[in-house]
Image 1 (tube, helix red, strand yellow):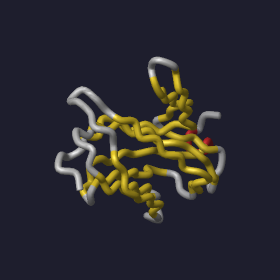
Image 2: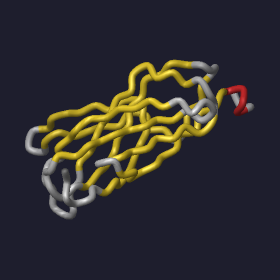
Image 3: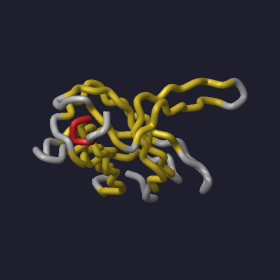
Image 4: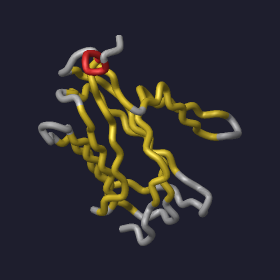
Length: 139
């Protein structure tokens, strides 16, 4: 397991993440339609979206990664877990972790919580507010 604790630099929700391999630069990631909240016409609603996580890791050990996405009313959890080895970086470096969630069913309006664990330790909590057009009052 990793000896040095990773640092989460940012978490961004977006519609999609694309990657391009640019000659002389390497792979670049493009976040398409990042969002801070979701306004959905009606609930329940299945949607696909992506999560981009900026992380700094200073060794190339194997890490246990777990994500939990928790619904506000029911407390239902969507979990993803696995082992990952990040590239070794300098102090200024970082890695971009891209995760795509396909056909997630939003059942409740309110504050959804994303929790990111590495080696069993909670390193980041991020919220995503979801509400309907009717709750917003603006069309």
